[in-house]
Image (cartoon, rainbow over all chains, first blue to last red; front, side):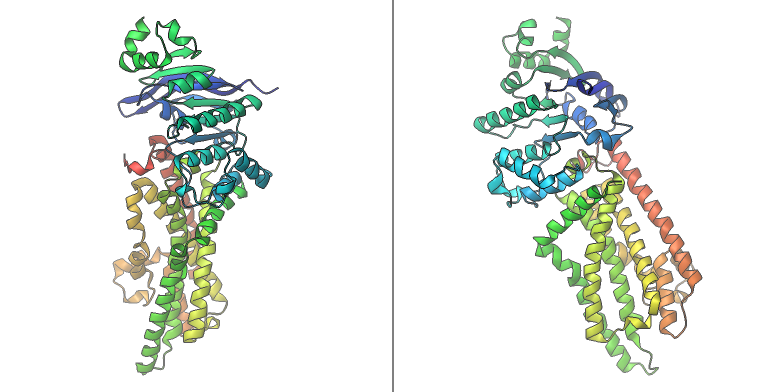
Length: 249
Length: 267
């Protein structure tokens, strides 16, 4: 029987010279669970995601994807992972279909053509199949990035501010698609966002990161009240401005 | 190693070439100009030389082989640069793709693009200036193989340098063949070089190709031992180049350079 944990992070740290960007964090993501990784700029969210993606080596700690140690069996672990990030658009000099085909081959997706067609339809990209990604609008590029992120039906999906450049209507659509994707398959999602409304709407659980440490963890709907705050946004601002005050309260 | 992943890197290059005259033209444009220019120079030299020596296989043949080597090296580096130019490192390396599959993809792309240039050069040199490759006989195959392998090794080293030093280091890469050519004895025997230059020449596999090419043109025969030494050296260089690229990549993953490559942070 497959483990319920799709991601296990244990005592993960990353040090750049004298700066401890991530400081011994541990957390899990279960299948069908959407976990929000929140925190102010520089809290260590993207560093954490980069380590899980295997493009940044941790100073210490372990990362297991589906029980596979990323440090020891990188290719095998990443076979079942994918990501979309606002700062990592797909090459603009290739068409939507070309990009999906190339990444589909890298992930070993079969049958690839059928999968591409299904994603083009699902993300309403059919009319852009022969359009170069560089000329698409931000919203369209985000949809292409998400289609690429779902090419291999990943069991671990990492989303770094996936709706950052979208208008509220498109963002709502994208959230619904990701929610559907997470609920119907075996996928766990780790999601970073600065939009607290979105986090409250989508995430089952949130981790608040500050100065590389997890300060709080819980249900985004009840967590603010538990800490005497009106909303998740108020809690976020408190953590960003006075993290020590919160941990002592 | 999964070949479909290496094929993806090659396919990406095909897609880019298909829709881009700016990428297709350099595959044969500069080498065609070189062949035409040196074709006329050798024709002129043949007309003024009293010895009756045929400069076409000695000079034009050397130009063709050297341009082939340059195209092989640039075939590797330009495929790598596509990821630099499109800021694609995060997308490409946050996948199951291994370094060896990536390097194989660069090599496959180079085989395709350099073959394209080679065919154009062969047609021009043969039809335009009467260069016959029968002059070199079966030795043409080891000549091309040695130059190809050395081009691959240098292309991998050059890519590693750009990965290590950042996108602006691209400008170190283009002059590499020109820097090597005086030591490789492309147009003259190594004996005309000062001793210190000859010492460097002896560790450059192309020098064995051009020395032996001149021997054949002069009516002698190639030295299998010398070519075997060149082959041994080139195998060593390919292994060293792969090790160097892997080391630079591992360092880039350790320092976070892969994830923020465009920042050009050399630390």
